[in-house]
Image (cartoon, rainbow, N blue to C red):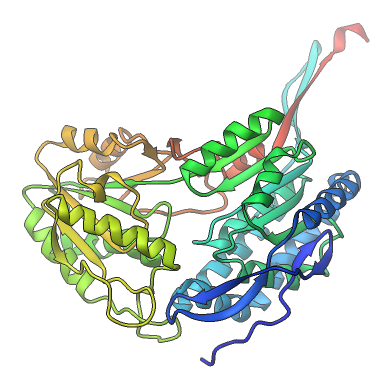
Length: 475
């Protein structure tokens, strides 16, 4: 596939596509060469976006038929432009093209799902004495701040749910991966009423402006725990409604009765899908001593068979780490892990070639305090901890400050489920990992976040819940 040239990229500000005097360079992580430059929004752009969002909110929030039409139109536009968007995702993140296609399809599914979202009244009582209804009401203007690792999918969850509930949205992309989001903004700009959504590439000043602006009623943020804590503290000054999906250090426990040949591939991809740059990726493996050596051998075989390379080679299964900053952080954690006693079973080093490529890495003989076990590595490496007693495995899995997801793998699914329910995580899986869907609630315990996305509880997160209580006996 020939490289695509991206020129005249613009932010969507208050319904109009707008350039900027400043820009950020976007590099292809597979080649370290410049793809393009994306415009950086200013605080003046932000002011225009807020004013426009507030202007249209009264009419937009009342017109459910229009909102459904817009959401369905966006779902269709995504599929019609799947090649353009998937190509951009692969170029700016280094994802294998087939993985990028899946992300565009998932984004479309989010918009289609939320187009059918119900804002129906829930009637708690309706008798001769009283009538009590519970109603979802829009919050107002939602400020959405998204990360670089899955920009189109995270955008779709925040924008689709916000709009379905009658809110208007101002979305800030990460300056590390704005390309696909700005292309999305361009292709939907004609089908969305002016001001209902603004999409801009911005730096920390724009994000800070969102959090501190009293005209914005809610912040929906996906990113690091550190930044989430800052948003929570600053947002308290204006009593912001918050949805915070933060870091993760998901543990997977492999039981001694597991059939290794049946699960090893799924466990590998649970850890290494998208080169491990997934908030819900398996980041720690606890394997029973009876099967430890056999399991390590099988996982090493799987990791060693992975093919690294550029996104448009059909034989490639793993791409690069998506940016230099993350590559350096990840590389340092792996080195620290080895220095603290971890033994590399395979991989363990960067590839001597252009691009931010790092061999899929399995580290063994680690103790529960090893840096690769404790920290969120967010890259293509997995530590394997040996355990003998299941209670110890659960205890160590729960020692983390994070609590996004976790999984248990075993032949006896009922036994595995009972163990999974002991994990302190927002989602626990049995014989699967990182299955996320628009209709299933998602979010974290502890330092992995506040609130829930997806499902009906996700609709509640983007709404004010109003109780209407009527005394019928006074009529």
